[in-house]
Amino acid sequence: MPQYQELPCGGQVLDIDTALKDGILGAALEPGDAAAGDAGKQPVELRKMMDELDAAGDGGGDEAVPAVFICPISLEPMVDPVTLCTGQTYERANISRWLALGHRTCPTTMQELWDDALTPNATLRQLIAAWFSRRYTRFKKRSADFHGRAADLVHGLRGTAVPRRQPLKGQARVAALRELRTLAATHQSVTKAIAEAGGVALLTSLLGPFTSHAVGTEAVAILVSGVTLDADAKAALMEPAKVSLVVDMLNEGAADTKINCVRLIRILMDERGFRPETVASLSLLVGVVRLIRDKRHPDGVVAGLELLNSICAVHRPARSMIVSIGAVPQLVELLPELATECVEPALDILDALSAVPEGRAALKDCPRTIPNAVRLLMRVSEACTRRALSMLWTVCRMAPEECAPAAVEAGLAAKLLLVIQSGCAPELKQKASELLKLCRLNYTDTLFISKCKLTRTIQ
Image 1 (tube, helix red, strand yellow):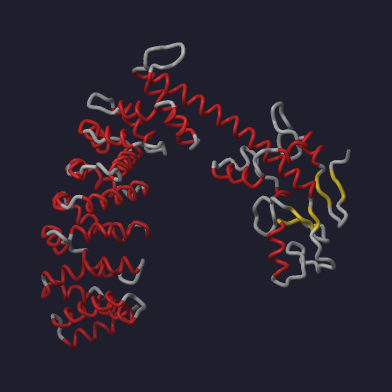
Image 2: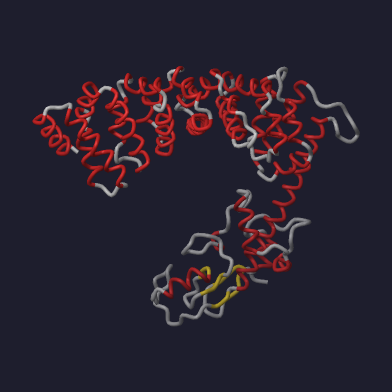
């Protein structure tokens, strides 16, 4: 049988039987794989198979999706391939949309179409279905193997393996937890198998006052990998001894351990029975601020800001503690260097800290508060502009004779005029107008006007 078949409208496609038999599009069929002729009988539809493989990050396994399967328009694998009179094949929905727009050329070759009929490419569709069926079958087999291995590891750690043995201890326990962590990180579906084997209760019980950091590190990493934590597990994790261990690891562990500890605390804060005083710990707050300051680990900065923002929101007494460890000047100094998605939560934290007298004083005393806040006006988002304007209003109201001139020198007047003339919310424009008046009252008219003109000319 030839490896290619001619199409009635011209062009060629690979013959499905020969292609799969000879392994032209990857590995040849192996025992247990779906046969080419059975591709249409798979219980899972082609699109659903593709979506599930893609969601699992296994769209092609170790093989790249063959180029012949890819629609030239969307650059995605085809589900319903049809062929034009030029011999080029496309996904039906994509080429139909092209023709509906009035085009009468082939998108790939730009040849003029003498016939706009769409001929279903059944052979290619079978080939695509067979290839993805093979990948899907192997993916399911691997998943089952991974699930079984994860369950075995949990039973070994619990001492419920068959034949029954004592729970793993020492280095054997650490090695088993490390392997379980790798499985959970690599295959998201494994987390369900961990939970079903009693892994959540096991991992929770491993965290305590006498737990080594090696065991605690692995246990926390698995708990934040996507394993579902029920109310009982969260309640157990909020016990003082367990929280104390997590805080110790936050301060002493490696970067990924610190990030996982912060994420676990953040998860616990969403629990209805969470006690706000749990986070009222100087050691915890110091560890979080240190993580935020470590610019080498962007994920840690994001996780730390999210947790600190949540703490400010749920436990007002903690705000004074956060100010006392020097968080205000540290956050202000970081503002120009933060990624765009981190600026807003950082400003939210500073805004919350400004609600306490110590926070307002710290903002006024920080030499970078005014220039960094002015720089953020009309830069990132309207929400950031609102927070930055609030900071400036706070410090200028506290010491107008000192701060208002400094703000004008930093270019505030021109930025406020931009806010007033922009499409921002009316209340934001009103706040900008009031701040502009405050600055003008504490700056000589001639210098104020010339400063506005000079700054706007430079910008």
